[in-house]
Length: 435
Ligand code: SAH
Ligand code: SF4
Ligand code: F3S
Image (cartoon, rainbow, N blue to C red):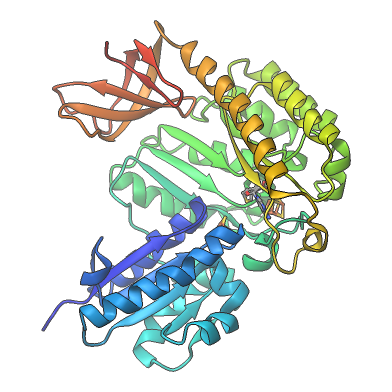
């Protein structure tokens, strides 16, 4: 009998990648082989993202490409699945626009996929069944040294521009014990670092082993008791949930890495208010100050949206001034994208050329900060966890405690090792430990 093969493509955030890993685990358990070649697969899963228009539209062109492959390489029993946040938001529309899609599953119900395929009846599954989902998933390491662990799902914040509360549903935190079990499994498979994931990861409030609600600081301290675990990171955090206890954990827990991704979106109080972010610029600066008081070397990262409806030149200047003041080691910036069903959708009123000009100015500033930050490590020693081979012979790539990529040449295999290396060169995006 010919072997079943699955191909999966992730379009979105780390959580979307985590879901893809779990979908692969579910089908490995059904004796599927994994392939990187869509034309070899008889099960193709597109695990989609709805956050910006471009990401969402890409799905339809990819469906067209898969249909062509299907014609050129006909296979028995071929199935095309659209999973993820577009599936959740536009399930019915996908069915109408792309009748070749066999199954549609949202991010909180994909555990049902193997069953749906077997029964071949219900086509759409888009319930918010977080609790059921985590109980029915299979958890195996992807084979690397670092593993994502989803601890919190969904979002109750409803920022005016964002689809996540609609695509991922209400906030849900997994119980501590379930998370510890998952991590222990990865550690037994050689993993050294875990990255806790959640759309609002610092709003984590899962049940502890004693039946009482626990916060993220507790969870970090609890899992750091696991001896084989060497490094802990978490993302993405919201400023209003950045508690003093969590800030202090950055000092007291040596396994917690000195890096924090803390999106602000804009440096203008007026825009923040309109975005329903629920805090102002000073509130954010105060968190930065507290963090730096506890851990002076903490590396800060953020997200920004430019061209939000009604953003004036003055608002944008405020963002630039804010970035200059805080100094980020890396940050991601996006042009505002109008999303269906969100409150900001109705008012998009800034020209694309203005949006592009602002994005380019902000990105140059952020790149300059990142470059200078990386440069400041040249000549210094730093601790690196090596993850994989590089493109060149004898080259290895790892991560510094501040989450920078570090390249080194070595004849000895460094993968899965934590070593101090001396930084010789820096580039805009990485550090090099060779001349
Ligand atoms: N939960 C996180 C991030 C969610 S999405 C948070 O609270 O910040 C990741 C990033 O995508 C956001 O931080 C934001 O910068 C960007 N984003 C979300 N919706 C967007 C939209 N409609 N247009 C452009 N960028 C968007
Ligand atoms: Fe989206 Fe805001 Fe929730 Fe983040 S906090 S996922 S930006 S609604
Ligand atoms: Fe995209 Fe869904 Fe993540 S919309 S960013 S895949 S939560």
